Amino acid sequence: MTNELTFIPHVVINPSNIVSYQEVISERPRKKRGKLFIDFSEASKDQDSFLNSQRKAGGKVSLQAKRKISKAIEYLVTTATEKKVLERVTRKYVTMRTAFLTLTLPSKQIHPDKEIINTCLNSFLNELRKYHQVKNYIWRAELQKNGNIHFHIVTDKFVPWSDARNRWNRIVNKLGYVDRFQEKHGHSTPNSTDIHSTRKIKNLKAYLCKYMAKDENIELKEQASGEKVRIQEGRIWGCNHELSNTRGLNLIVDSELDEELRLILKADGIRKYEGTYFTVWYLDYHLIAKYGTGILFKYFSDYLFERLGFSEQLTI
Image (cartoon, rainbow, N blue to C red):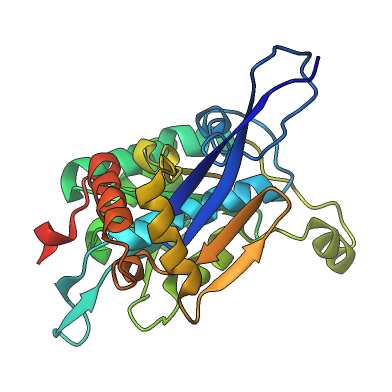
């Protein structure tokens, strides 16, 4: 007896691409032999367990982690609205969408990486949420040349430089890092934070992905120094719960959606990649309405509002 196979077409919509694939269902139960299709809606379900894990990355960012970081950045950049802020040096108002912070330790690290993350970084992120209404953020931990751990944070809100520095210094001094800095330098205001400007970067997503997902080349560092290089312990990155659970809008393709997808296929200038079990169209989701695909656009706009509270109508 032959098995009856049913093929159900799906699309997954993200801010910069649409993925189509076939879900294969067998009407006769059989032994598990691995997946016959790639289910992109399931691809990131293990993200929460990863964020809560204590695995040792060894300075390496896995391919899976890079994909998750890229997706989180994609959604953060997409939903970050333009804001007018007063520039500290020129005293002029400038337009910005995201803030890029770097946090360092004021003195030599004497606590384990995990303790710095749990005691200091988590407290700092809690205060960003409470006092600056930061909703979406992504952080990355790295080791400096001096062996200290430091952090990069991308957020969707403006955080004043002085406020970020004061908060971080107060928090890390719970472990005595500012006190030890003062013993050596004679004052208690170390410049332990930096805010990088991103407003002039053309491809912000690509820039942030490259910066946040880069590897520490342990082998080259050891060759250059001739000594064994310290490897960071614990988690190397994380993001807020909403971003970690945003995996793209998954829809079953009916006749109406199929017609709109065919319109996209006919459009000029859209890059397409065809895999064995899936096809990817690369395009900005704002453009899908341009091609007469208003239903797809509405579904995805509703998805952004449901998952991340983002609506372009509310930002006008």
